[in-house]
Image (cartoon, rainbow, N blue to C red):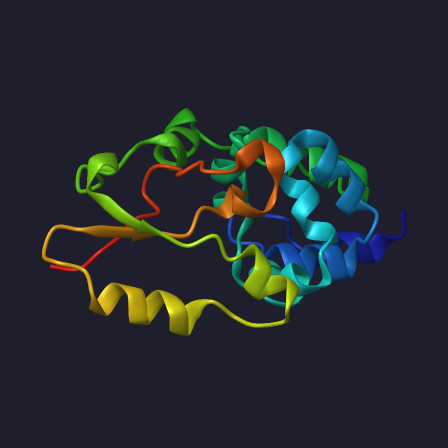
Length: 162
């Protein structure tokens, strides 16, 4: 790999879209690490989710160690420097926030059909949230567009109206 690889930092804050623009070969590496990452093949998700999702978020969704993910991607990209993290950083991504209660989810939006049609679900989510009562949650499961993850609601992704 050329030396320009080192000018791109692969870190917890790195956005998936920027990573795959710079290192397209890492798409396969991500998909091998977790089945949920196969959604990255969708051009719609590439244009939307990949632009805002960080490696930290992706590690939590894929249930993979953030440190392992970053170091594996760096190795495959030809970057020699190893990412060092204390175990607390990986643990934070996996913890369920104290404010999240699974039983309060009253609305769930499977955004797959909207994304496939080129629509962005944000307006629908906002409209759904206006109808929530105090204490109710709304979630858009990131796994809603793949078979293995259907109905999965990762901890911490509920939106509550207070």
